[in-house]
Length: 333
Image 1 (cartoon, rainbow, N blue to C red):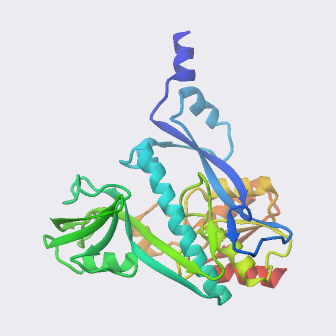
Image 2: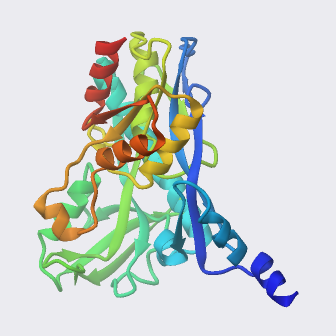
Image 3: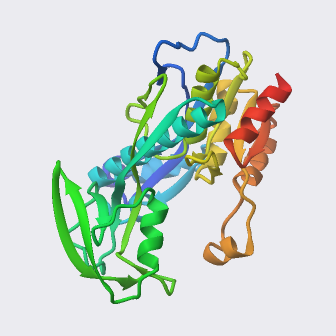
């Protein structure tokens, strides 16, 4: 009896990663005075996370298709549950803004992006700013200089020598602060850094205005689908043409589509929804990528393998850019 209670109710350090949902985008992406009344749907895909899992839940997970078990550290790193949830919110906010910019650029409509700084997503224990910077802070300047993109912040720091002193200006709860520290050598590199992970803190102004509200959905992987929904509405071209279109992928303001996690689970969910098209990021493994991550697999390759296992008629379409997805939809409608 004690064993049964342990199996059913005592949580472990493991979480269950499983297929999530296909969420229609039209209710989430609101373009001012331009409602999406076209037939068909665009869907963003989610991965479901359950846990901390009990032993019984873990045993059940082995009977489920496309389901994996991951540790708390694999899921959240050193973040607390609250910090992890906040990170996912920051990621999807950044993804939504990048999606709007890339969609308006593709539609040749006016749009402006303002780089407010960079969100602090995590702080290494050996960072000179550990205990000073917190998750959710926005770094606005390095040595008094503001940069126009996260890549520019990173490049400016990497150009300095390990041990160099830097002053970081950051905002927290509407107040501006400064902190000084010496740059450390980033793990696995010879480059200098301040020991944080980051994402963009941006705001977007467009005509017409766009508001994207994903509710409790988090993470950066809906970027491509946010962009397609926005593009279809603001361009007026209806490239969806009545079809059920799913997909996934990070996106930047230039419209480049990046690799994401859990794509096999997203293919499964899209197939369950009845999608006829699934866009998958296509970033083939290069020698440089393999050196950093020997386990790396191209999303498109994994998605095709999942589709074959499901014996689905859903078309898996590789994309490297938003324009690739738009061109495919226009060519096949």
